[in-house]
Length: 260
Length: 291
Image 1 (cartoon, each protein chain N blue to C red):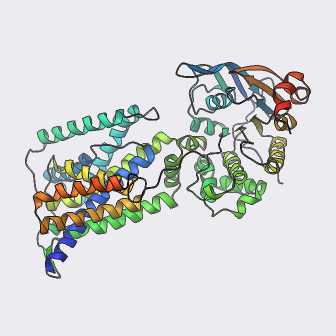
Image 2 (image 1 turned 30 degrees about the vertical axis):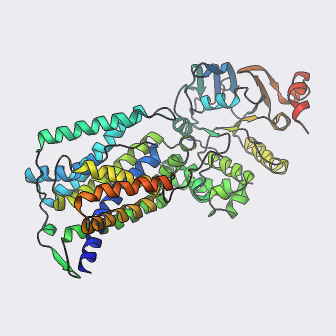
Image 3 (image 1 turned 180 degrees about the horizontal axis):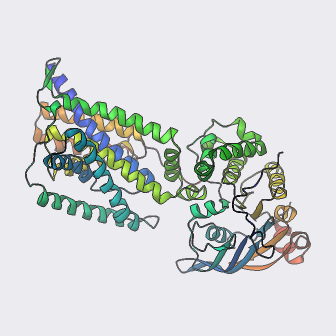
């Protein structure tokens, strides 16, 4: 696997400020009408960090991710990305700034070919740097050789695992600095997960910051550096993933029930 | 025999108009899950603005494209001002009211400023009919099926071969996912209404010399274009095209064998019956749901 060179355009002399997080969320609230799904969350992802977010179904994880990535506007609180305030910015603007999200349910463009899905992943890059976009396609396809075999197939005909690969590939093609993945494991077989998680670890080693939302706590704790535990719209606690894996609070609530 | 050829040819011509207007509805619907209900006014503006520009002394070859372009800009402006703000929620219906309101205003303004009487839109192709297998038809009328074929291939190329076209399909399939790859779905929707406007205005411009330009020329044709799109299943472009042409031909046969008065009564009855039998449209299938 060749090391993809991350976009260097904006990495001037002023950065990186070591103490400053790449993503900093403060007091974030998300409501649907009268129902509050996220009730004041603080969360940080440092440059180069691999961060997990675990919690049971309905804890507010997806709502939090949607507010961070600009799919929906938060009711209150602040999102800062790459040193600038981005609260309430639309998702296509967040992508342009370097935050890409692989959404829950994958949402590949099922009626278009794998090739066209990848092309759309390069949407922002094709305008900025067409040659670089083509090179990036090659790099991403090297990560997921299965997709190269299926370039002309309609994305809707792919298996769940292949669709997840396509969704991740599509997210990577915008050349993000932070990749947010919402429910990587949803509906996927363990065999597929054993293939996908190492790819994420490798991407992280190459410098990509990742925020991974996962219901399968055991997987998330195994690959991430640090993990947040969320319940009822709030972050209960966070800490180094290796420690949380042995934390009784986590073992009772998430590992005992889910792992094997 | 001559009569049959006559009905087929004129039916093909008017059917192409319905198909083009119907395709306009298809383009709007797929991008926005909303339409300009008074889309017939964009059709009308294509012809009326051409007459106005000719009045001002512009040559036909300039007036024609300028009229289509201006009408398409009006179509885009309607999206920005009267569809987008009223289509924010998932099942919003405000745009139904607002597009009908702005359409009615447009029609009244045209009556006041342009003329309350139909006016000729001169075209060198609508001066002398030609004979084809015993039937008489203006070359202008034959332009419509030609334009329809060109429009169909143009749309196909746009949707399947250009990045912007693929982005429009992405927005149509899943607006959230489109945003997450960096596509500005609002801008794509604006563009969709502009393209739909081009189709509608082109149809109006081309049929104008045959039926004359007037402020009300679009009302019924816009409605028929919408019905044709619904009957076909609005998410299927090929179906819309086929239904539009067939409906035009059917109309001419009803006109010929029964009467002009019977045309719309029977035509609309047919539409209602078809919709009863095929609630999803003839070529429609239940739209993809989120997996």
